[in-house]
Length: 138
Image (tube, rainbow, N blue to C red; front, side, top):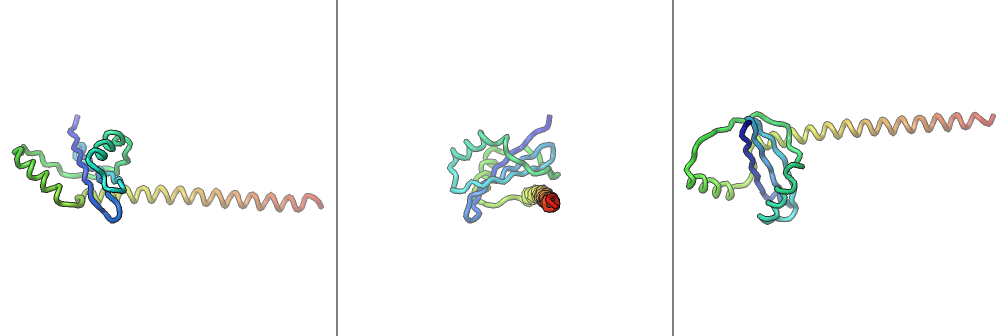
């Protein structure tokens, strides 16, 4: 079974706080974007992750390179502190989010087209029925 790496980045994108979940499994990166609204507290984020992680809609997987190295614990602590100070998400994550957005857009287009055609068909049948009703009395 492969190793899975998860990462959550929370940043402020006017006017909302955004959380980006990044998940790397078997060399494939998938991303999910969550809007928090007001600034979430640490315990609120932890509670959200515990309750809703399995319900998140992740983007289609994008191939990525995972470097596996042993690190000094102090170095890891410094890097974590550095990551907390910097904002933004990686380009691979943005690519995966864009892919997910495009996929949802296509699904929405298909759904709206089907609804429009169904409505046109219904109106056509209604018009035909009215036309037949007019001629029944004569």
